[in-house]
Each structure stands twice: as C-alpha cells, then as structure tokens.
Length: 498
Image 1 (cartoon, rainbow, N blue to C red):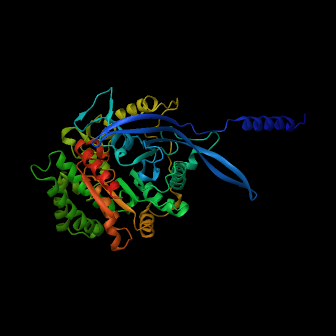
Image 2 (image 1 turned 135 degrees about the vertical axis):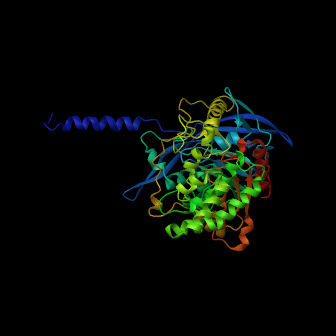
Image 3 (image 1 turned 180 degrees about the horizontal axis):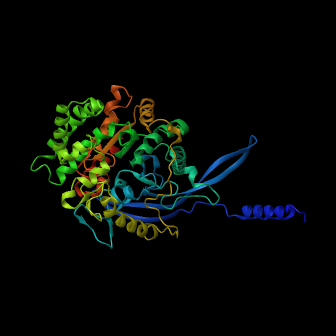
C-alpha cells in the first residue's frame, strides 16, 4: 500500500462502481383497476390506472450517444372510459390536469372537481370534521373526456431517481420539461395523438399550462384544443407586491371588496354592484393616485382614502396610514380585527384566529387549514384502497421541498408566460381558453386575470377563443357547492364544444 492511500482509493472506487452497476433500474409500476360511475347520462364503466412513470433523458459523452438514462419517477392517476372492442381511442378527448404551488400535487382538482370520486370537505362556516368521506362525483368530467392527473417531481409520490438531483426539476424549465415529457409519453403509449387534447391547471398550474401550450407545440408538434385555467396567474408581476410594482394594489382591490361584502361590511348592497364600484376605482383613479405618489394633492388624497375605505370596509385612518398601499397580507389581519378574526388568503370567506389581535400578518391560512386534512385523508385512502397502488412514501400534498424554485430564465424581469400563450394562440388559431375565477380568491385575484387576458398579443379574430367564468367562491372554486356544480357544467360544455 502506498503512503498516499491510492490502493485504498482504488478499492473504494471499484466498490462504488459495483454498487452503481447493481443498483436496480427503475421501472413503471402502474396498477389498473375497474370501476363504474353513475352520471346524469347513465352508468359509466371506466378503468383507473395509478402509478409512477419513469422519465428518461438522452445522454451523450464526447459526441457519442450514451443511452436513455432514468431521471425521475412521476406519479400519475388516469381514468379512461371503457370502449367497445375495436373502438378508436381517438373518439374521446383527453384532459391532463395538475395543480400549482409550486409544490402542490394534483389532489385538489383530482378529488375536488374533475375526478370520478370527490371528497366532502365542507365549506366556509361549515367544515366537515374527521373522519372524512369520498363520494361518487356525478358531475365528473370523465363523462365527457378521459382524464390524466400528473404530480410534478417532489409532489405526491413523484421523486427524482436514486442518485438524481431533485433541484433539476424545481424550477420553471425543469418542471415544464418533465410535465411535457409525461404528456408526450402518455399520448404516445395510449395512442391518443388523434384525440382532442386539453390541459386544466390551477394557480401556478395555469402558468405551467400556458407555457406547456407553447412547449408541446414547438418541441413535439403536439397541438392542443383548449386550456382550462382555474385561479389564473400568467404574469407574476400582476400579483406580487414589491418595491416599484404598483400594479397589484389595483388588481387586488375588487377581491378586497368581495371579501368585505361577504363579511357584511356593505350592508344590503348586491355583490355585483360593489364589485363594479371597486373595478371602476381600480381601473382609473386608484392606479393614477398611486403613480402620483408624493405629488398627489391633499384633496385627492382625502378623496381616494374615502373611496378605498368605502369599497374595502377598512377604516379611513388605516387606509391613510398605509399611504393608499393595501397589501393583501395585511388585509387578512385588518379586515375583521375588531371581531378577533382573520380571513383566508385562498378564500376570504374562511376565517380563523391568531394568538392575539395585534399582529400585522396571518401565521397561517384559515382557508387552507379548513380543507387540507380532508383532501390528504381522501387521497391516501383512495389511492391505496380503490386504486390499488401501495407506497410507503409520504404523499406530498403541498410541499416546501421544491423551494427555492428557480426562475433563472426570467432574471431581471417579471415571471410571465403571456407572450408564450399569445404565440401559441397565433400559431394554433383553434386553441381555446377558458378562465375560471373566484371572486373571493385573494391569492390570484380575478381582476388580475382579466387584466392579463386583455393584454394577450393576439388579433381581434382570436378574442372569441377566450371565455371568462366567475364564481362566488375562492381559489379552490369547487369547495363552494353551487360553484362546483356551475364550473363542472362550464368545463364539460367547453370540452364538448371541441
């Protein structure tokens, strides 16, 4: 043995190489089960498929092809209506769904709105206590389209492969490429290239969906028929409060007015009347006053203070002390402070308590806390039980493990896919977009979605491809039962229209 330990190092290298060579190659572990669902059109027989798909990348070393190396195992759940033997699979649409976060699994749209089973979570003021229940979803989109739910890497049961780097997927491009590859693989393996194809995204999932419309077209020639965007954010600059960005103050204002109305701060006035007043203020006087800054006269300041207090239900003294800058995180604490309550970010109809009533911001979101347990319990029971997929990994409903999320592609600018969606619609004039908004959503406000969609760089001929839908609900619109029923019908109609 040499004094520098080279022999020991060589033995270590050989052992490491042997361990790597003996490591089991990951493989798809999909499980298939059969079910029935009673819908308004009658009984529907369907097949469920749950499990992890292995994603691979092409590797080259010194210009030589080095094979397809596994990089991630992505968990999916698919529901496919049973067909007659010999029937063409292209006869039915395929809808791919995911949520946002970043860091969220697809459980919310899966068990809240689209899937053949749904969880009873209760609603604002009437949460359901544990244990929770799953019931058939007679309004499931499965009656009109086959469904594929995708959990991005590090969410749900999806993980990077052993020895892989999860951070490779924790960013705009890495995430986009992985989800695009899942879609390509599924469409190819299930012979769905000739099917009508749709994406449904929620929250950050809307940004992902809009980006995918461009990526799937450009990279694979896979053109979509439609996007359903729920609780939309395509331009982060429209919702992020930071120094120098005045836009969110105006775009959040109508949602603040909706929250005030829900909690009785507008008396007997109609919601639509209150929203119209807030929208006019948000479109004209409010952004003008913010842009004036210290140049705003005392008289105009007094006028704006009174107007903002009127629509938001906040005191004039509070509005004045904020210098007209109404940050949503502060509003959650301030709106019902005199009642000892805070309001929810995801859904301002929900209320909660803090240790004291003097704080500036919520320590938690009462809306998320009210429904998280129901969805977690339902998913874990459904996957291992009815779907027959067993894993001892924790199912990551909404994880922080994806942070910090990389937006390096947007260094020095706001994160936005408005240009990508515009280009996708110009290249594919058949691409239709449905935007679903909750009035009480204080995470991705409806007026910001209107602002963003109005700014798409598309010709007037394509404006008719966009439809806006509104619900008296929050971020998870389907938590509110009347909104769930209405949105289910709107989405079904959108898909049936082809």
